[in-house]
Length: 247
Ligand code: PEP
Image 1 (cartoon, protein in one colour):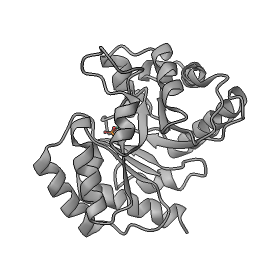
Image 2: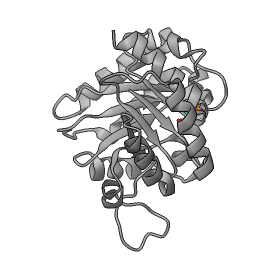
Image 3: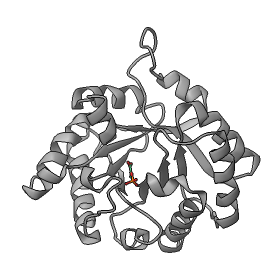
């Protein structure tokens, strides 16, 4: 599973150019979940271009609000479903930091979406936590947002160390693998139906380092920010994933 998070980037012209290069360089093959979370205003455009070109790309939202109504600027789950979104990213570290989202808000968002769309819950420690060897404690605390929930549908967790996002730094692939196994174990032990999540790695993934992550047993794909803004480099990451995980 490879998911692009375009954040607050892009324009109509960028999207058209992105697909031109993606189509040229991608070797899309059966079965791999390829997702793009564009800015909300461009979701429909991306979905239409993907459909017109028979691409297996699915669109998703970068966030979702806890309800509809008098909440200026918010996007509800009903609107997301109305716009052909297959997944919603929830709890991204930029939402936590810049929009003051806490674990309670994130739990409400998960509860609101879990039976309707595929939630991609982001978790990750800061550099200070990492240096103090608190990574597993922080992740366990962040994963408590799904404590005692029952996931009838799929659940995806994105492990995104805050210090790796947009920095060019990444943990060692072996350490990522160990953390992913830990995340899977915690999720299984705290959810009512022992949910078995896919775990994506996110944080400075690019076409030069992707193979080192995809070669690890418990890495089920990637959530890609900066490198996903270029159709060609995103296609290359998808191709690498296909080559390693879909044999
Ligand atoms: C992200 O913010 O979700 C992300 C993975 O960003 P980048 O790939 O740019 O580090």
